[in-house]
Structures are given as C-alpha cells and as structure tokens.
Amino acid sequence: MRRLACTLLLALGSLSQGLAVEGASFPAVSGSGGAVASAENASTEVGIEILRAGGNAVDAAVATALALAVVHPEAGNLGGGGFAVVRIDGQLASLDFREAAPADATRDMYLDAEGRPVDDASRVGPLAAGVPGSPTGLFELHQRFGDLPWSQVVRPARLLAAEGFIVTSRLHRSLSSERESLERFPETVRVWLPEGRPPAVGSRMRLPALATTLEAYAEAGPRALTSGSVARAIERASDAHGGLLKASDLASYRAVWRQPLTFDAFGWKLASMDLPSSGGIILAQTVALLESLGWRQMPRFGADRAHLLAEVWRRSFADRFLMGDPVTTEADSQSLLAHDWLAYWRSTIRMDRASLSADLARLPESLPPESSDTTHVAVADRSGNLVALTTTLNDTFGCRLLVPEAGFFLNNEMDDFAVAPGRPNLYGLVQGEANAVRPGNRMLSSMTPTLVWRGSEAVVLGGRGGSRIPTAVAQVLLRLLVDGDPLQTAVDRPRLHHQWLPDILRVEADALSPETVQELLSRGHEVEIWTRDAKVNAVRVLENGTFEAAADPRGPGSAGVVTPMD
Ligand code: DON
Image 1 (tube, helix red, strand yellow):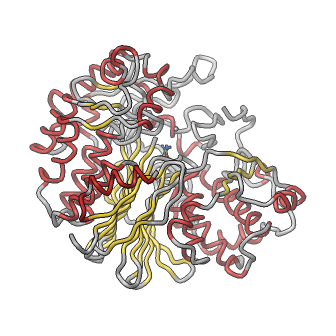
Image 2: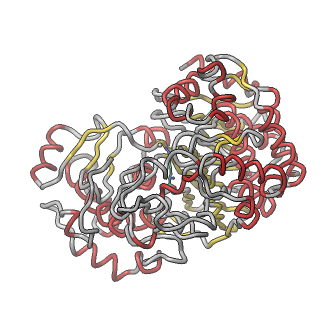
Image 3: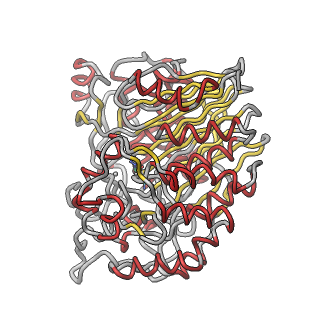
C-alpha cells in the first residue's frame, strides 16, 4: 500500500499528495488547493492536473470522468450515462444524462411468449443497452460551467488512450472474472482478451480506436459520437448481436437539466439527485425520519440505531417501488417527502419490533426468489465549487459488447427497468409499473451524487454499488455530520443495508457486536453478514479551508489533493 501511495505521489510530482486504496485504510489526504476522489490513480491524477492548470471543479470532474472511460473500462464510459450535482459560483444545478430506452424498445422485450424472462437478455449483449447519455452529458456540463477550453479537458484522456496506460492488477482481475461473458463478443475479445486472455499486469495498454473517438469528441463535441460514422458503428455492432439501438436514437438523445433535490438535515444543507434517480429521495427520507426520531440522542453503537436504519430503509425502498422516470412515476419527491407522508411512516415505526416488508406495500402477486459498474467522482476547488458526478455502465463492462470502431463498451442499463413483473434486477431490487420499459423513458437509478454544506464547510460524495449507494451515502453522512468522525473513518466504518425486499438486514463483518445482532434478531429482523457494500468516494472542505479526500477501502479508489506548493 505504501508503495502505491508513493507511486501516486511520484506520479503527481512533488506538488501534490495522493494515495491509492484497495482493501486497506489510510487517513484522508489533505491539502489547501482543491481535492479529487475517483476510482483510479490515473484518473485522480488527471483531475488534480486540471485543477493545477487553473481549471475549476467541473473541468476537473469531466476530465477525470473521461480518463476513467479509458483506464477504468469496467465503469468509466462514453457508452453509458450518469448524473451530476454541482455548486458553481454559488449556483446549484443537476444534470440528468441517464440512458434512455431506444425508440424500438417495448415493454415485454425481455419476456418469452409465456411472460417469462428470457435468459440474461437484459444484462448481456446490446439488447440490454440504453441510449448512451455520457457523450452529451459530459459535454453539456462543461459547456455550461467549465472554464478551460473543451479540448484541454478531453486531452488527458485522449493521451492515455493513445500513448497507453499500465494495466493494474485490479483491471486484470476484472477482465479475468468477467472473461466468460466478455468472450461472447469477438469485438471485445480483440481488444481486451488478445491471445485469449487479459493483458498482463504491468503491461502498457493502448486503445487507438478510443483515442480517435476522443480526438473527434475534442474537436466536434458529442456530434462526433451521436452522428456520423461512430453512431453508425454503434448501430451496426448492436444489430449484429440482436440489439435495438439505432443511430437515430443517439441523434435524438437529450441530457436534461433538473432542479437538484435540496433539503436540510442536522443543521446542514444538502443537494442530491431527484428522479430519475431514487437516490436523493431515499437519502432525504432517511435523514428526515432519523432526525425526527431522535437519532442524535441515541447511543452511537447498539441495536437502536441499527433497528431504525432498517425500519427507515424498509419504508424508503417500499416507496421506491412507485418511482420511475418523472414522466411515468407514480410518486415524486414532493409527495414522498411531504410532511404528512413522513409523519405517516414515522407513526408506523416501533422501536421494539421490526415491521414486515410485506406489510408495507402492495406487492406483485408472487415474487420469484432473488437471483455489478459505476464510478463516482468527487471534486472541490479553491473557489468553493463542488461537483458530485456519478457515471455508470450498470454492470462491470456494461453489456460486454465493445463497439470496435468507437473503442468503448455499451451499457446494460436496461436491466434497471422493471424488466419482468416482480423479477428482481441485478441489485435484487423489485420494481413497479412506474419503471416499466417504455421507449424514450429513463430507467430508475439509485445513484446518489450529493453535496452537503454549512457555511464554508462542505462535503461532496457518492458511490457505486446499485441499491447500496443511497444507504452507504446516508451512513457516511450521519457519521460525519452527527457523530463527527474524520472523513476517512466515516467512509471506512462497516455499514448496514436494507432495501425492503428481500426483507433482510445486510451487515458488513464487524459492523455490529454479537449482542447487538442478538437483540436485532429478538426484535424480529432477519440479519445476514455480507461483503457486497457500496464503494464511496468523498472530498471535504473544512472550515479553515483545508481540503481532504478519501477513497473507499472496499474497492478501487484514489484520493488526491492540491497542496500549497501548487
Ligand atoms: O443506476 C443505478 O442505480 C445502477 N445502474 C448503478 C450501478 C452500480 O452502481 C454498479 N456498481 N457497482
């Protein structure tokens, strides 16, 4: 780990500090000129470089996201989508560049004649791909709020693709563990499994087709990908493997500026993502209910807080069943955060007894049993600007099909729709009619890019991990805002998760003492130890102007800051 820390220190030169985290914990890094947290050293380094070159937090976040599209192909992308919540010059905004269902999508496209889900069609292969939003979204974010020229923001990613980057053991592992599904597509094999296996750890990986795409993107913006030869190549690759994506879908895709979801909790102001992500609503319900139920006064460790988290999330995720694209949702943030609705939910919570998820909402008649990639970038700059940017392909390497001429993977975000009544998605989420497949609709997300501030203090955070993202973000925030944990400790501490269905409280090892587990069991909770929690990246600005950055020890992550010498 020390060696990795040194590698990034060296890579960043003597002017910045940084560290890499994978499976081990370090203190947060701190500096005074801005901070970046992202999944990889190479991408965090790009963000720091852009801040040092005078770019603002948006320039840095977009450049970091584009670098991730090269060095972190599991999740970084041009073939996926995402959300950004920003505060620039005091102005709050959020951008929805979530993928959309293609025009030819139909409600039953993943079902056979008997109404049963067909294999893994919503997960592997281009039928699983929504219309990518990243090319338009990243560009529009920069157009509206960036300071540096667009070509300067794209350049580091283009250079990484053209000149190559070093294959990490993590990338090698991801490719090895997804090998079987990647092998279904010769286009993917040619780039990522040359000679039938992943490129060796430590070798230099060049991505010439992606470099060409990025060069065109730097010159012409999203048109370079949403029309012309790249769009036609996407249609061709999709068609060759039974997909529905058309060049016309790419041409008609629009990113949407939406009102960020803003709320107060525990004396802090928060801004997060509203529909089509459920993340902001779940986070807002969680903190509102906990605050009014006396969270601050409860003993920090022990059964009461764990019990309350389970009860609150059981309700928030039951509400999630009603959510979908803003056009078709059956309930929105206004109704689900209304005083009366929160008071009703509060009135149904007992401290001595767990509720049953099945009692909390009307479910599809019968539920089959329950059967993951995303990456978060957090940036704060010295002018007080904040950017929380989460992008995703959904699963690792998306639908696994790489478009050869474009050089990037297509997402498998369609699986975030309710693809079959009552069928849990990749994250075990059971979803409702509001989130059925409809052409042009955005599939419901759980991503939770979030900003938090009080006076000059601020936190930017978000994560990857599907349905576990909002619960992880909520716990990190509660530790920071209520319990006063240091940033890295707040990210590191083991977490809990409940998502209504399955009706199980998931617990990371060491999150709870055996006595607390016993007490929870006696209140009626089903408790399961698991290792699949979300990965959170966060940066923080302290009252004295110090910047901190922290990456999650659970997964790939890299935190960097700009130091005074910059
Ligand atoms: O939008 C969503 O909620 C999911 N597609 C996010 C996927 C994710 O976080 C995968 N990361 N491990």
